[in-house]
Length: 145
Image (tube, rainbow, N blue to C red; front, side, top):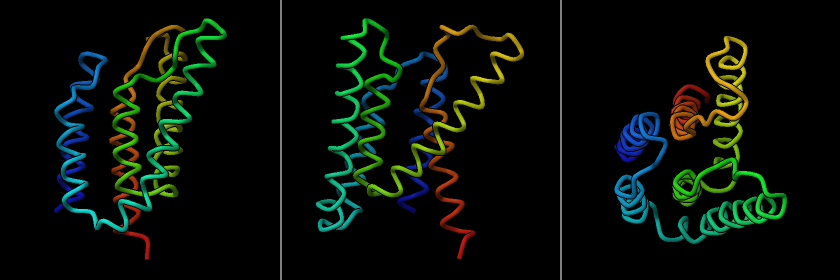
């Protein structure tokens, strides 16, 4: 039931992000509260380093973009969402989630460029791909022995 709630919250966040290119705080707070309530404390403590690593990598990327005077490729709402998922899933599953989300978003961006529906500077929302990556993780958990 916990995973289903997380998937529904991520789906709602993805729909909102696709419409407005921003992630509201309420789903992040709900996911964080659910993670704290439903995840055992020892697992939360182990996964806290994964969440901190997500923040550290984002801050390093943001600093690099500021130095190079280029736009930051991922928004703060996406980082909040990813750090909460890292807290729930752990480092390995968070990496797998990021890999799946990155591959899916890259394929979508390539398709948009090929069919000339978007340009090189067009922003695309990342939360739908995070939700799709999480759904893939759940499917793997169910169907792979």
